Image 1 (spheres, rainbow, N blue to C red):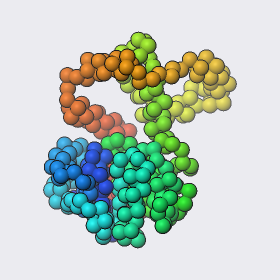
Image 2: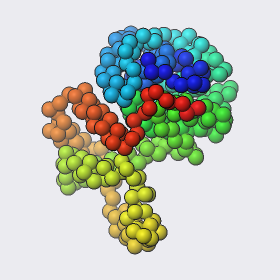
Image 3: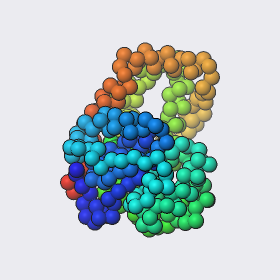
Length: 326
């Protein structure tokens, strides 16, 4: 395996991944490729087959990232009992259902049984650590480590401390994810949905509105995004883009001469669609027309190849040999 570098490898030798779904499999592949043994906790009877099949599917992508995928599953094991699964681990990455009461039960058990030195992280996409940690004796240990799907490929991990999360936990989580080759970003305050998903949700709302209104089809809208703002934002985010759009005067000039007009003319006109029966029928019909000719697995593989090509062009692929950020 391609190991984590010292001193990170000395601290993280075994990880417990709670939940063996798409996110859990993705995390498992990345951890294993970095030389971390993984135990997966999931109550499904067929979890071993599902995880092994999922790992086989993402192995080519891991290899394209420069990670050693030989005998990838050698360090993989399964444990259906949560209390047993987290014993003796150095990090817990929880990917359970997005329901507060379920996560609270999970984390009560984890805290009672995981070693005191273990990094405790939840992949939740919307529930704040503050709420989850209300039932914990040591809420300072819990932190949100929210990946952008799929975690083994997309660099971002949003690190979101709760109100009682310690600075040491924040530093520990940042160092760990950076050593995995990720790009961790610590958020300054908790907000529902964090940042990336809020942006994605806002854009998708307008996408649904434009399609439902018959302005464009789904395929046409996707083509517009990938040929314009998608390409632009890959190299410069929204604020830098508009800073450049302001010319020599930068963002202040943009706000004064274009931004105020955007607020007055564009913001009020943005749509507020709903997933009513007619809208859903339109979206499904057009999705079948645009994407139905390929399986989800084929589309995902195509996406991953293009994503890796883009990351390479931008110099954002992880350095498999020198991942020492601790």
